[in-house]
Image (cartoon, rainbow, N blue to C red):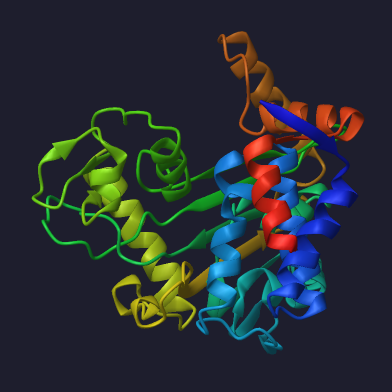
Length: 335
């Protein structure tokens, strides 16, 4: 049940206060707060306020550098390497964003390789900004080992998510954000919290037996990849791009277990942005609309991200709904 509604600004400021109260520097707190508030505003409950206690627990665990200042290295005309200094990846990306955008506009394509970083949020907020300014964007992120792949029986790869953004003229970008597993770790946590069963094929228990109990997956079990070998291959690709290419940790190297209360993975993020006008000319936009029109004609009712935009519009007009349970958590964290 909804307890109250708040504005986006109010929610962002409240989250930032909580993060600063627990030691995170003001600049980083503001950036992370906006990411969390954006997910809640857009109805992405699995990556919104539900994660706030996890952030606080992590900040107090000693696992994350609370005063990290990212080191941004301009390596080549189309390449940036960002060392997050054991801080949050979103801060490193924010510090790199203008330079990454300029490189893509100048060279046609550019990559930012983020390492020594933590990421505990949805990926679409990381690339929406670029697509709103006319760039095609792709980002990948590796996580700690949560998934059995290629019929293996030991967790090596994570649920490794990726997000893709396609710009449009006079319309919001088309953006999808998905894990390499049938559902994200956040959605699994939400399913467990709400005492719901999993669809078949999401995960196995600690003995390797198929289960629809989310708690069994969380307590020593493992995710399975979506699409079997196809999902395994995608998770492997993401591990290469996000860890091997960036210089970040592989999921199996994660050391969070040594920091009680830590929830985040210390891993890497790969971000690629491309200026489509430099390859396809202004016709790019007309061709995208032609494709979307054909999809609509085929019976497609909703493109990726459209539900999120509708929720955003409603939240900005009417306020972001906060449940009584979540509000109680917020008030407790503010004390």
